Image (cartoon, rainbow, N blue to C red):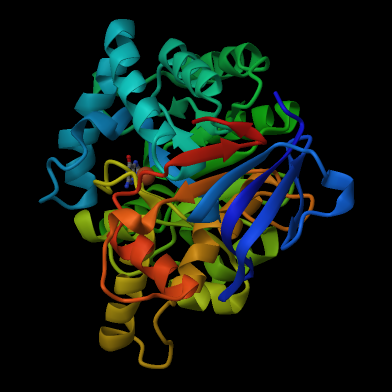
Amino acid sequence: MQTTFALKGNLVYTPVCGELAQHPNSYLVCENGTVAGVFDVLPERYRGIPVEDYGDKLILPGFVDLHVHAGQYAYRGLGMDMELLDWLEQNAFPEESRFAEETYAEAAYRIFVDALLHSTTTRASIFATLHRPATLRLMQLLDQAGLPCYVGKVNMDRNSPDYLRETTEQSLAETRRWLEESSDFRLVHPILTPRFTPSCTDALMAGLGRLQREFGVPMQSHLSENLSEIAWVQELCPGTRFYGEAYAQFGLFGGDCPTVMAHCVWSGEEERALIKENGVFIAHCPQSNMNVSSGIAPVKQYLQEGQKVGLGSDVAGGAHLSILRAMTDAIQCSKLRWRLVDQDTPALTVPEALYMATKGGGAFFGKVGSFEPGYEFDAVVMDDSTLPTTRTCTLTERLERIVYLSDGRPCAKYAAGRKLF
Ligand code: GUN
Ligand code: FE
């Protein structure tokens, strides 16, 4: 592997939320896996390094999918006429139970990893299923593909059918074993994954809190997604004032436990304050929020409040793995929110959506999602000559057309300094 090289092309990224940095016909230098800088003329010290010239194409930071269920990819686009809780019972749980069988898991995860590899996504925070062997195989496939991801073995010890439920003891023992067995991947790391409060007893959550502190791993779950789910959590956890407390009481809500929560469609003032105080990441998944009739998350307000926000496909609540599609869905949902719910908060812009899709979600992985020096070298090359027009477009307009019109397949892709194709 070349440790120092450059890409040449039209560089577009968002160092600040809502502001595009544009460097036409410029060099992006990679040194030891990280960005060394962006230059319009290659400095003397880099003379002679290999340069991959992408001509007039656009080069963007790799995209981040902050919330996706690999174990649901097989039925994406199906069963979309139900609300969340019925949809889980009738679609998600039966499909996920099939991952007990290793040959099924192998076939399904190969399809998922291949789709992720050829998408604009370089990093993702992924739910697998309950099953430890299948989860480890998914981690291995992602590692071999060169995709630096977090992957979670899901925990569930209540409120699901017998065929997709562990005992508390089993769930904790399997999670410990999985954490021990997942330490030697190069790029892929484990993330604790209690499915959501209705699926996990207090004893399981307390045990996961202890494992979090022992292994120092991050955690992901779902929060305040759908009104019927939230009412159920209130019944299950009478001692809590809001849903987020059901996680926080076990030390599983940010602070020393890096946390990403999907959705936060209905988070109230107190919950939002705790999310902010504890630095919890919000994974906004607009397509899923529409499909399973959850609502319209106040994402623009979250940005204005200084919350940490990224985008998620939430496949298979969302039907599409493309984070470009998540960007347009986020923008369109925010327009409906402005029109129908809150006329004081304007809609999201393309640069804000690009920020969430790259640097916003990337921050969960460290210095990821930008071309500023020191950032991990993740990049995708987009060819918009496949989107013909008679107009001469500015770089901003070309970005906008890619976001709205592209099939989501980059022509080249780099993650953590390595060329994947
Ligand atoms: N809440 C608990 N499990 C799930 C899931 O699989 N998808 C979504 N969208 N929400 C959930
Ligand atoms: Fe989800």
